[in-house]
Image 1 (tube, helix red, strand yellow):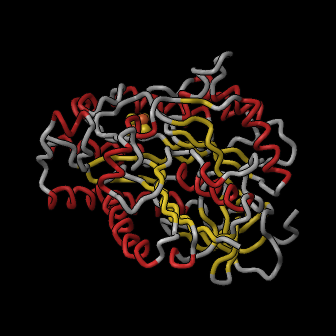
Image 2 (image 1 turned 90 degrees about the horizontal axis):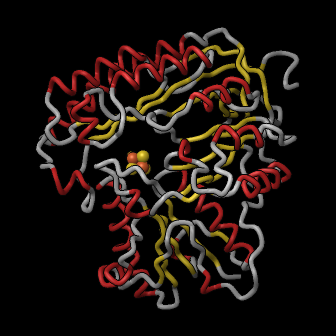
Length: 419
Ligand code: SF4
């Protein structure tokens, strides 16, 4: 039986696509292997959002060069965000690669018969479902619109059908994915939006929870906030990247909102959705970001107190507006210091927020078992571990929290559960 190996880095979109790619190979009679050395086909699902990610992809490609020499029958393919429209140039740079696949494409050179559904056969109880590809926003630092192209939404009926099938295969929770889920549907004939889609998905029997990633502050509508507040299966968890808390930097980033607008949006979300967990993304060391401008971001984070903050140091991506227009003039040591100045207080904030759950009972969807402990997430996305001999995979269990940390919670199954 031929074997395949998929190496994936990057965002959840890449992970979801790799899962589907794996299912595609299995329908063709391939078996998964855990090492490239044993495989007949190796696919690298790449990310180039940051320089560090691109470097890892290039290192991996270089390492596979010698494997290709010693296994001349090995087929090597690359997909994901490294694959741009200049395939000829990529072929010149990486002659060891046999095929370059656009993100979301399948290795059709292997297909002999028509392939059925590419949904994973044995999905995890919580799984990712892409609903919109690409992005029209052109934030000045971001390479995604150049690599993944313009927004393309999947029809509501297709998504509903797919999730219904996933539920029959054991899925209990879905996370809808898009670079900007708030743009969902504007390119479809009836122009449904994310709130309409959530309304449809909320009616699927057997589906217990719905999440989505990532929102864009300028596009998140009051209608969506109402839908999250009113639909019982939609979880109280929102990812809302702010990136900076200085209006000049936001303008240079081409984000399309001001700090005040963002602040009001957070207030509206929190007053409409009790118990909502908010996460945000921040870039430090954007070209010309002064100490004072950086401090404004630190201040906003301490004012709004997010559950999670993903912080990254700016790195210029060739081809983006920012890399053409601005000099990368914040020194690396300064960027590193700014990262710490965000991470340290955020650890204290997350400690405080999670400590509020001590001695409380939370509902956890169990996703797996690791080092003798079951683990799963609350509706608000908190990671919870508990020890128990029972069998809990895919079940909703009530857990009494006994220990908290900034990153996770630990507890015990409450008597009388699972229900
Ligand atoms: S919204 Fe901005 S940061 Fe997000 S994918 Fe689109 S261009 Fe990139």
